[in-house]
Image (cartoon, rainbow, N blue to C red):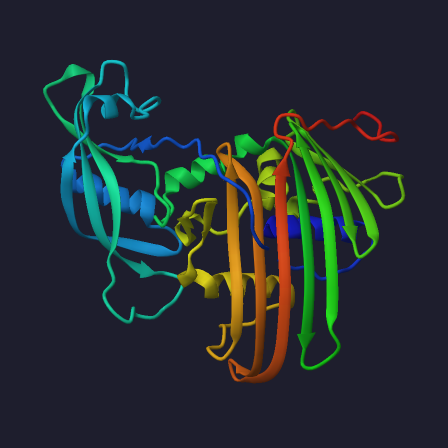
Length: 371
């Protein structure tokens, strides 16, 4: 989402416009297509495989996971083993000897805050440990298998990577809506709103932006031969070519960077699984607020304990990809923050809907000649 804010700013600046930006709510039923993932790495023991699972699938930018204990809950049946997704990891000559369901108990350090936990807290995740005989040899290797997550589980790296695979978003339409109401230092309310539609069709991208009644259109083409992004901007139906490399400073250099602009900025370890997809975990609320408020008002430092806060960040999954992102922030404070006396309140909502997967079509606008 941050990348997209920068690109919208670039479009406005290209037309001599200046503005301040910002960062939702709820609905719908999910359909996950993630069926699990077998580790590409192999380990010498069951415990090493479990350690590898915590290091690769649970530890991330938000947390560092540490193994405390684990308990074998039973063997998987032959039918369950046959249902494991192993394509791309195991060769046809590799043989699965056995697989166990293991309940892993771990502790974790919150890397977003430099404070010790109030008490020792442990978490539990059920994982499979798979014993493999490579190419029919007499030696055994251990691998972990990430099963389908249950509601309330922390998100795994494999699930997150599957849902946010950029290849799933190379043909779709995204509709972004934002509204912001802020009062800083007792002055009159600041009200803002913006809606934009972005369409992605292979190497062609199209933006239609309406910010407070000001309408701007951007058309983009990525040239595979020269590895450059060409862009044209219009505020009146007439397209003007943006300077070559103009959008590089805004992180827009290829198709993948354009596709990922509207996708979540936090990594997998900030989220937990839900019945609609996944959401930001409560313990990372401060990090989310600082990130959102910084993008709106500049550097605000740490969130005061005296602040009144209500915030959510929910991500809806349908057919194995995002269908909607919804976020809302209500924040108010009167007093001091980091030694500075101030009063401020913010109400902010944002939504992004992802639609028309595989059916989005873009044609070059009239007036733009072939390069």
